Image (cartoon, rainbow, N blue to C red; front, side):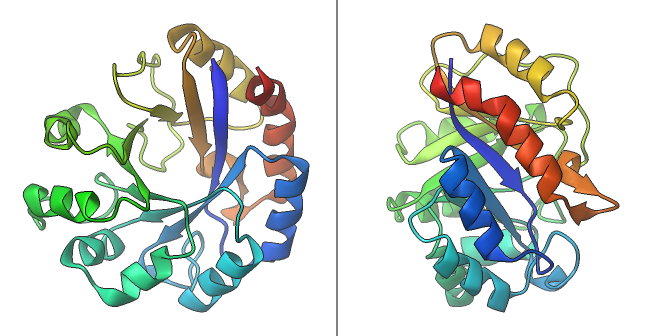
Length: 229
């Protein structure tokens, strides 16, 4: 197994993007994932558009992802220009199908068409057992990846990690933190043997709901040997 990315999710207005860029130089495999939910902009985990612009400039050319949540996700499906403009500074886009109130509010065929029309991004599907029926719609859409994420940002670990889905670039999220990431990487190493993957964490790198750069650094130090394998 090779760890392609270690995705650190949830930096917000409290964080100086220059500090993230500095960590990227030290740990090139880190991916900074920024949550976009316009209705909660300026609250913990959800930065304002002005901060997102500053981040995009500071971290240009680095590994970056935007996670579209709730009205951010629905705005993307609808083709809202303000959402697409904010996405422009990022390499990968995660579609958070399990976060917020989106169920029944979008047409899956319209979502697939939107992804297909934007090949410049890799789109990550937040995959759960309830959403597995959506995956066949993306069968002939090359610019997608799959994140096993039953936790959906709640910091809850699964009982076990699933093997990657054949033919899909798959990643893993749920309940990881500095204290257990080594153990989880070993478990993922076993089920994803010989494949390239990534991990993502959000709640586990926060302290009192503040993005904690010390925890981020510790995770990256632990994950570094896997990124080199």
